[in-house]
Length: 272
Image (cartoon, rainbow, N blue to C red; front, side, top):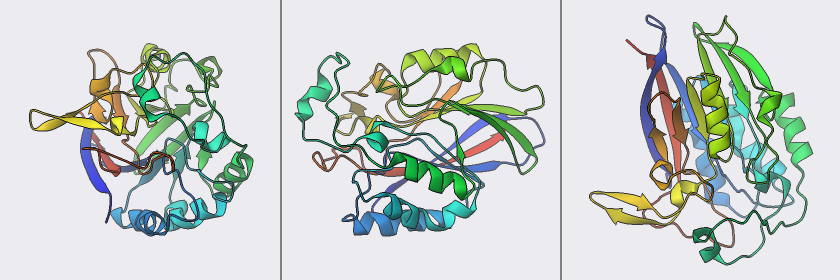
């Protein structure tokens, strides 16, 4: 398999409840030409998750919707939640890769429109829940989960007010799902006392420097601190945050350094 499997456990469930295996992936950036990647994504179902969460950027080509659906394969038979990223709305365009290291002035170089409506209709038709500015409740094993999400903050499409508010009292666990983990979204979800947030977008930094036995991201391509560019992190009195380093890259910047493509298996466990 050409992807690294990141496995982490998060102590967020009430005592006595069975663990929940969450498959979290992001940033597939798929096109019909990526045959090896498509085959590998099909294998994700072998991880036998209880719940699948995608944090966006499925597409990288105008003809990628059927490619994505084929690649996801048996995962589409499982409970799933998703949001979109900027690359689900607009195709990739060449840009200076060093621009990611510079201050973000909010200007976006957008490519051609992509068929996000077709992807949305297909995924929801197969039973996955669209969390772009919506809330839902689902039961996995013996745990009632309330989930909420936002549209892409990198394009300023987010409006957390549409899903804001205290979690449902009947829920055992409250999670947030967003593509780009901008601090305004994390802070808003924290204020509503969510337990865990899933995000993508950062590509884990994509290019990382060796650093005392690990590696260090140079950027997150948003205002998230670099040390939180991938994996599971937590700040005091805030929700856990899990950021996927992503499976793909832009077709115009297909280089990763000390940051392999990855998919995550996040096991939710009782806190005590």
